Length: 399
Image (cartoon, rainbow, N blue to C red):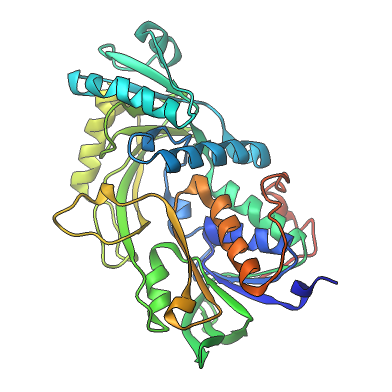
């Protein structure tokens, strides 16, 4: 019997990162309890526009992040095909400023091993018939679309199938019980029944995204996380087949993502001190409609569906003198023994495309910390279909 069979890990946060971490640890033989204050994915994971990043958007800013996105997008296509639409991506230049970006963009993508090929504008119009007739250039990259909920729930179903996972939803952490340099347990309150429960564990992982600093504050730790909300807008009907982006430095309203039978334009970006207080602004909605129309002139003919906002959990600090978009999209795994708590880890930052890698990194840290040599298996095993989470085709425990 593996030693980790008797080792209990508690994960705080039921977004994509927490769920992927739970799955990774279960495959390595650990017993895992995951707690989430709402439904699974009810935070940022369930609210992003669903782009499967090949890394092209980040190639000019950070070659390593760009290549990491490429590798992880290829893995997700292999292990979660039911949650991925590999429909490619197109970057389009609409003006001379966009054109000045083109050559450096292509060379940066290639330097990060990301295939990027300019195609004739006439061919671009064949691929995307609703594109602006006046586009000046078009570059194809291997982007795609994620169904955010299906992807995360596929990881959850796979974790439950191991019979090593226990999921507690609508369970908010209200306090953390510490003794000396260790966390002994957490107290959670069920948001439906108001029942308070204490959960003990051998090791605790903070995977609560934009709320990660709130959790750390419960044990007097300050975590360098900046909640950065952005507004997105969805219209009914797919005006694009590919993920279509503006060929310029990352900015507001520069991407249209086809998601099922919707077209999503995203996003804006600002800073919030409270990830709970995140709402779409009317001026953002008007701006996004205008931005979408610049790429697809008939976008305003689609029927408006909805608008929403989500808080990105960016790692790092923001000052008013800097651009929030300059904050890294990379992730960090943190061992809080540096804060004199020896069984507490945090995983922060990252993107939906890198959720599996984030789970791998923090799980590697767990194994190293407790002296167990157990390798990651999540890149090689196809995930269970998300429907099994509801059909109960296993004997996992969830409440």
